[in-house]
Length: 294
Image 1: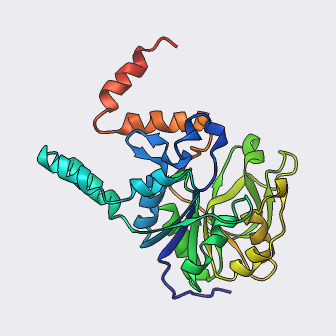
Image 2: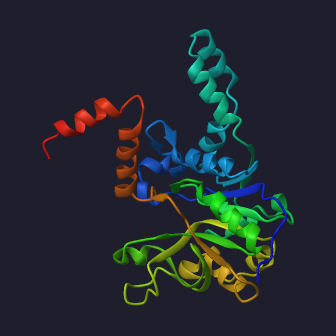
């Protein structure tokens, strides 16, 4: 049964408190979310996706080692004044735009390790509104934006929604894989969510992760959630409990490409792909790549 939801989603949570151990020693001093994709950090692509999806208030849950994220989205008067004196108007515009993308709220993570904890940390800011939770160290480039596609499904059905993409069968053990029933077109009702199954155990090759449209009834579940794998608190475990109370949908994102910038190889592929599309670099960079004797 369709339950239209009239509340406009305007808030989002970006968990960004992890240590980024897969990129050490680089991430010893630099947050993994700040790794550059040519001239913008990964997390800025995530923020821009949210803004393009109608989000106005973004809660970034950080740790003591993530101050660079706060600085990146700050309004740097000294830098702007210097750029204006040098006549670099295009850069002034870009720096201002970054700071004015949204209303940013920063919360320091408290509690056990795991990706459920930062969502719970944002409870007081979110209040009783539906919201988006989205990872800050990977992104999907889609038209329309992934988050917007998920929000539109939520507005139609009134229940939580997770973004989904098809992955190679050989890669299912890296993701949360769903067993689901098709509702319409690219919308599926999730029947079972299996974290990192083997190829033999996987019920499909549809990975549901990365962007979650959640309702406030997730918070009591998070508050009583028991530690799971590696004694950490996991958001998918909370969503499994939520599925006992209400439907949860997967939105198979259309016109999309997933950039898994959380591992070294995929990160490097992303940098190369975006460099080849960059208006200032594509010609010379393409020539350079062709000149390499591989």
